Structures are given as structure tokens and as C-alpha cells.
Image (cartoon, rainbow, N blue to C red; front, side):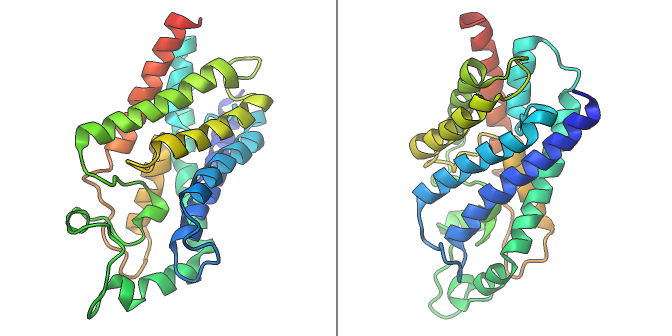
Length: 263
């Protein structure tokens, strides 16, 4: 794979991942969406199918890492870090593009949601932020469409949850999901990985929203901060390091465990 193939493949694939994954969050969250209040099951399966779709499309070009934690895990497995910056650059750009596409696709719903006085404020209003503490830390009323946030703010627990979830994802990919070259997802691996993401969402996603992917959280969070959304609230930057650092640690641990136990 050339550097240009890797960059293009990761940009396209990660954009599709965030478009479909962020899209299901928007569908379930936003006022005037036909899927509003469809629930956590819809979100978990939506993200799983988003991973599968993006992996099948980008796999022939880049191996469909779509996640810096995957790139790190594979680099530790192979000992080859030469293409890591190219993967990271494509993944972050793609995540930001995908978040912008979600905003475009749900533009009217964002406007309706964020101009509703029952949501953004007024006499007797009930804000969508989960608590006064969350509001004070800057979690805006639509931030969950773009990025993750904890139900209970506990730094050690939140970080551990992201590490554990990403460890499961990477161990599944490294043992079951790789292509014949071992440098990305294979045809069967994309299907397996999609269902593993559903499993992680259902079993481990409740505490933090299971980023398990640094750019899945960081790219859309940057876009949330930049978009001209009315009454959107803050982007909760005080929490933002956890869904970046946790998955990177989890991916690195999984790569090390694979080399010790499976290689």
C-alpha cells in the first residue's frame, strides 16, 4: 500500500464511519427525527454496522484501520511504524469530514432541537445535559451527537473503561480480523469487527459511551467546537483527553499481549 492509498483510504473510511455512527446518534437524539428515542440498542448496532461498512469500503486501499488504536496495535505486532503518521492524518481528517456531513444531513433537526426553549432554556426548562455538574464542565445539549461523555465523572474509572473496551476490540482484530498480509482488516475480519463493536457497545458502552477510537471522539469534538450551531453549549474539553489516551493505551496493551500470547 502506498502512502497516498493509505491516506485516501483512511480519510474516506473514517469519514463514512463517523457519518453513519454519528448519524445514528443524531437520529436517536434530535428533535423531529423519526428515530428519536430509539435507544441504546439502535446506537450500538448503528455503530457496529458503521464500522463494517467503512471497513469494507476502505479495506482495499488502506487495510481499514480507521482508528489510531488499531494502527498502534498492528505497529506493535509487526514492529513497523513507518506509515503510522499517514494513518493518523487520514483518520483525523476523515473523522472531521464525517462530523460535518452529519451536521449537513441533520441540519434542520439541529436547528429545531437547539431553538426549542424546553431544551435550551426558559421558564421551567429541562436541559438535555445530564446534570448541573455536566453543564458546568461544558457538555452542551447536542455534544453527544458528536463525541462521548461519561454518565459518572470519575477519571480513573472512565479511563479504565476506555482502555478495557479498546483492548477487547484490538485483541479481537489481531487474533481474528486481519487480512492475509496482517496489515489491516480482511473480508471476514470486517464482519467480525462490526459485531465486536456491537458487543462492546452493549456490554461496556454504558459508563462512557465507548469511544474506543481517539479520532472518533476528537475529530467530531473539534467540529462541534467550530460549527455555528445555536445554543450548542461547550465541547467539554476537560474530559476530551480520556477518549484519546484510553484507547491508545488499550491498543498498545493488546498489541503487547498478542505478541506474548499469540505470536
